[in-house]
Amino acid sequence: MEAFVSAVNDVVWSDALIYLCLGAGLFYSVLTRFAQVRHFKEMCKLLFSPNTSDKGISSFQALAVSLSGRVGVGNIAGVAAAIGFGGPGAIFWMWVVAFLGASTAYAESTLGQIYKTEEDGQYRGGPAYYFDRCLGQKWLAVLFAVSAIIACGVFLPGVQANAVGNAFTQVFGNGNMVTTSFGDVGSFKLVALAIILIVLAFIIFGGIKRIANFTQVVVPFMALGYIVLALIVVFLNLDKVADIFYLIISDAFTAQAGFGAAIGWGVKRGIYSNEAGQGSGPHAAAAAEVDHPAQQGLVQAFSVYVDTIFVCTATALMILITQQYNVVGDLPAGQFIVQNVDAATEVGSAAFTQMALFSVFGSFGQAFVGIALFFFAFTTILAYYFIAETNIAYLNRYFKGNIPLVLVKFVIMFMVAYGMVNNSGYIWTIGDIGVGLMAWINILGILAIFFVAKPALLCLSDYEDQKKKGGKITFDPVKLGIKNASFWEKRLEKQSKDAE
Image 1 (cartoon, rainbow, N blue to C red):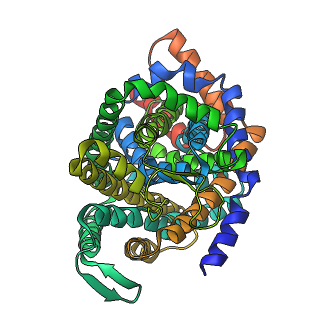
Image 2: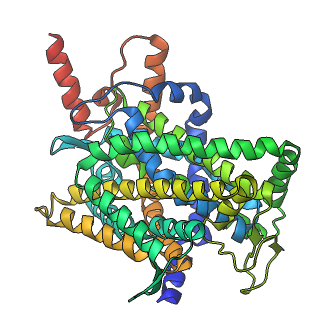
């Protein structure tokens, strides 16, 4: 089974997808005239827009929900895996995919806002909705919805849970070994699993509002605390920082693990971490209450920076400065291109990161990574559930009833349990397939949308024009020639009536 999963992953994550992700980011960066740079100040300002309603969440809450998906295991264990398999140069390619991916995040999240709908008292939107309403391709919308449900409901939750289990083991040990159908599992890992399942059930049965309220507190607090510890490590080793940046950049082109490995692992782990182009961000973006779709597009572009430029870089600097890593590349098991730590250290886990903080802060650092990983992973699982729920809501127009939604809640809980007690390499590969499937469909779809209608670019130009003129910001899709944006058409009509 593991060999089959690896073979599927090799097909999904061929070089074609890697360069498609980079190419799409460059494409939208050029077309938006690098909006991710030009509007950086506006992004920060929009974060704290107070807009909210009974049906929608605020821009900050939408950022928190999307960041709960972006800031997760990929920032701690994923960065360690990128270095371990691709060398330090993989971090450079994570930066590249984040910078370019910010424009992709703008495009997909703006589309999510333009074509959102109001269903069951809350806003819904995402790739399935804009493929349906903009392209008129229901088959593509259904294909993405099914892929997202499988990826976020089945493939991806196990990756987050597995990393939490490994972190607990690294901090507390195994405890008493318990014999299960999946082999012997440590009692401490089972305690962590029980806590996750109880809290997860409480929150996911409470809907998007409960998810947003939880993530807007937990995500910023943990991300800030994690970055502060990284800054302390950097401050204590200021004399090494210049050499580390030189190592990252030089290794990106003459990588110890091979040029292709650096790009491949950097892009793969970068997209897994920041999710730009994957199609997950638009779901949270669509749930936000905003005056103009471009506003949420810019907020979501900023979230890519938070994820990769801030949090992933913090992890990379800690690992590289303390030299708590090995590089295995594509060598046979037991052989290393670079070996600084015990050969038995698991590359595809958070071990490098925990060892890095342990070398500076002792047991506190190791425990903090375990706690941070718990919350990062847990909030990411919540984001996965919300994405699966949104796509089930889309499919409900074809298959009525609440059974699919209830079923996906239990499937996610089962996959969390499955991921916690299984081999991490195998689970990571399953997660990569889930990310890859969504990315293939979404990136090709948003490129097709550009050639059909260009709604994201029209939105950006309209928003920029209104900002220059001053006054109240509004969005009139009909005026811009954007069709089937029925939510905004009805909203503008209601605003006109209220003004009379």
